Image (tube, rainbow, N blue to C red):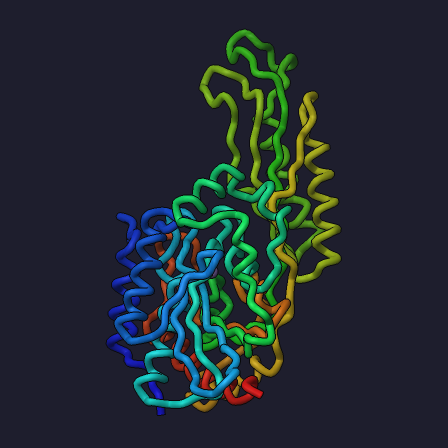
Length: 410
Ligand code: HGY
Ligand code: MN
Ligand code: MN
């Protein structure tokens, strides 16, 4: 019976964590940065070293495949992502990719013949440094040209990034797979929240993934002299942005208790001590598991923007959205069965983080396995998951893969 080679798994995870490592011990691998490109090359090298087929598709998705001898065998995709947020952690995305590779190698080592091919895949730009779920949406056929016109990272960064990676915008859609060739999608990921740790549970069985919407807001004020302009004569874009940030917090805290909203960046122009800000650029993102709540939250927060605005008004630009999706119940019960057989405790929970699984869920049965995050911390250098938990996650991914290969092959 196949089993995870603990030494090989750990050695690969540690080697990958060195690529783009930061002085604080985190990882900085924004999409198409040198570190990101190096991590993807490393992944293909490791796959080739194991004698697995490797490929890079038109959206830059990197994958390793253990081919089934069965003719017309569908592919069971095991994925995650090697790109990170700026100054992110070692586990977000990377754990799932290394565990997926390890599942293929363990299966191959055991000379187990499956009715499905197994493919370990690293999706392009999951984090939205450029677009968000770029590779997984392209593969699932969910990438539309309008998503590339005003992406979160800005169009110049997108085009420059694609060029660095040897990709072109026109070919991204060629990465689309016929859903008939995909048996299912499975992803191991850290929880990135505090629930599993608080409840001392080993494995999280993900029920659904929240939806999210992102907007760029520009508050237009009047730049002016910081010394000579009386306080009642100012049209201060910085003050408008500050009022908006407080309004975002109050709106969600008071009226949308099970949603979240974040202003992760405020940039004031011209950005000098002695100049009243003429413009404020604000990055807004909010999430909910309920589509209807996303609409209500959008209305409420954009109303707050207009309330806060300066005389020069506020410009509001949508720059990204990911729909909430439920995950597959057959996969959820397979994860539960495998975890129970391994003596691991489980709970079911929704994901407050976005994942490639929400792009795949539109076209194929998709499921996610969570392992605990220490203190619920993520998207920063001290992101940490105990190695035993990582091993548990990889064993559950292996067991669920072997079980589901039989279920979804037909
Ligand atoms: O932003 C997210 O939720 C995910 O980590 N990309
Ligand atoms: Mn992730
Ligand atoms: Mn992330």
